[in-house]
Amino acid sequence: MQYEIRVTGHLDSHREAWFDGLNITSEPDGTTCLRGAIADQAALHGLLQKLRDLGIPLISLTPTDTNNERTQP
Image (tube, rainbow, N blue to C red; front, side, top):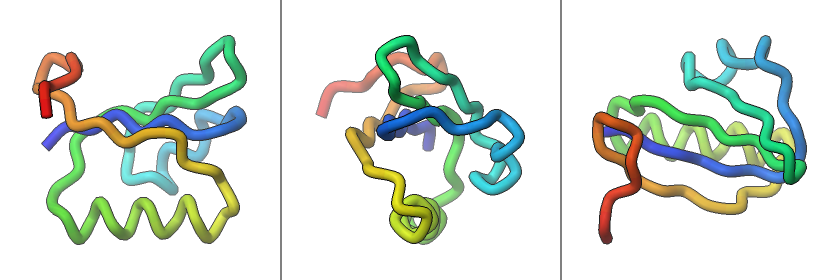
């Protein structure tokens, strides 16, 4: 499953390895968007736990299709 995770602040792109190779994009509004495939729910929860442990505030978590377009809930 593909996801888009938006967090507060800017993360360096060298942290992609920390986040299982998700693409990291710093946005002009001061947020960071992490995009990519996450294997399963356990991996998703592990990723969210890493964000929490690093003190990075979560703004949104959106499932996307394979073309990185947001899906309807």
